[in-house]
Length: 240
Image (cartoon, rainbow, N blue to C red; front, side, top):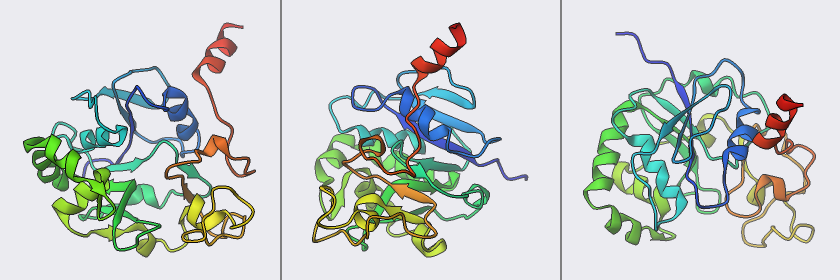
């Protein structure tokens, strides 16, 4: 049987700081010719993107829990997922050819013994177990995943699957954290003595920059951060 095509997956849940402009900004950084889906409760029209309604509203819980829709059984393709505050700074075409039968997640930049869900490769075979486990008792999982050892959706996923392949092991130097690997202590308000080890510059070889927490990409003035694109600007351009 022929292997299904890998899809790029994004998630946009309304009611927080993200909107379709963030989707547009990230999509503009991705190579052309991709099959991109956005799981969302606020459908929009954007070239290259197919909107798929979220199955559940996820109201009353942190926005990242909407990532659970990535594991729903009706989407049978393998998925390559990016958080909306990811910045692509180099050639990632090799990632788009991922065919592993194992799930791939980030090593947490602050706590390397744990996993991080900002960028994930999700083989279809992994979805049912994660989906079924969460929806068997969602409130219990939301309530439990509030400590460092088991934090948010990534802590829940780790609790279900144990460990998995790590992007940093597969592609050393490709994946970096803005706050851990770039900002410099004493120069940036986002740097901390405990976690930051950067010198203020984008590391050589970096291709994917992860912005976990504050700041978001558009809140810093780095020259390698792409311009923030808006849906309204495009609509105004087309009507003029």
